[in-house]
Image (cartoon, rainbow, N blue to C red):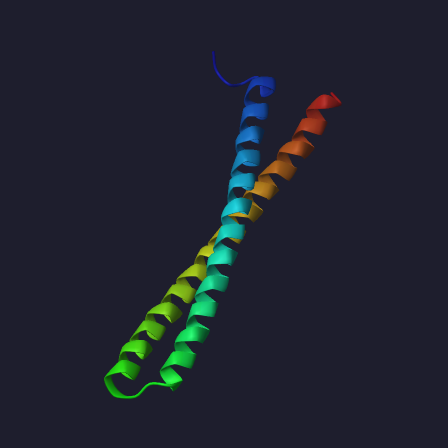
Length: 105
C-alpha cells in the first residue's frame, strides 16, 4: 500500500521533523557551550603568552592559532545548525497549515 493517504504519511513526517528540531536544539546548546570553553581557553593562552619569551612563547602562539581555528569551525557548526533548525521549523509550520487544511475538509 502506498503512502498516498495523508493520514498515514503526514504524522510520521511531522514526527521526524519534531525529533530533528529537538535534536538540533540540543546540539546548538552543546556547540554554544563548546564555543565558550574555546574562548576561555584562548584568553588563558593569551595571558600565558604574555608572560613567556622565545621558544615557549612561540609554542603557546601555535596553540592559540589552533584554538582560533577551532573557534571558527565551531562558529560554522553553530551557523549550519541554526540553518538546519530553520528548515525543520519551516517544515513543521507548513505541515501544520496543511494538516489544518485537511482537518477542515
